[in-house]
Image (tube, rainbow, N blue to C red):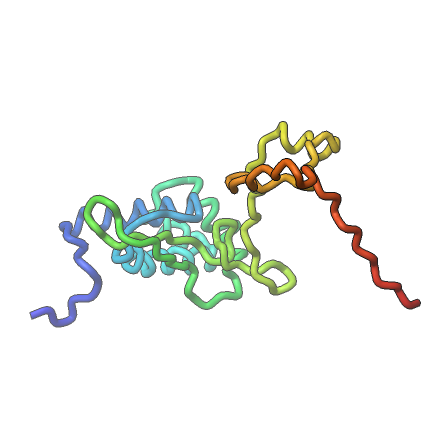
Length: 192
């Protein structure tokens, strides 16, 4: 029976699982974002929240306890510096899990785990309370065509020409006029 057995086994032995969690927390604190399976991301939330809570305490005892788990000086600096300030008023829920879909090799459900409110968080709000949206990249355009359009040297379409890919009309008979002049359309009077 599985009474009082909390947490997921993740298919590995306990020492391997502890080392994996330490490495993932360290990487997430250092980079602000990691890509992993959904199951591992859900299991990672508990030790991550504990480390950020220690970072918010900020005293020597909390630093020593965090140093037992986090294995990088850069991660420790981020934890007790920038992240402690960012999450000072937040009571929990320091991470966000965004699902990506199945992994190609084995079909495991993949996810990206990011710290809430960071530069990697697509749902973060700016100072005015609006969601930030990732900047859209302009569509790629050939430089030559863009320069021609800006310079006004682009070839102009003829009045009787057809669109590319469509068949042209059959040639006119000998007795008919080869080219008919387009009718002028009168503009309606504008009333001021």
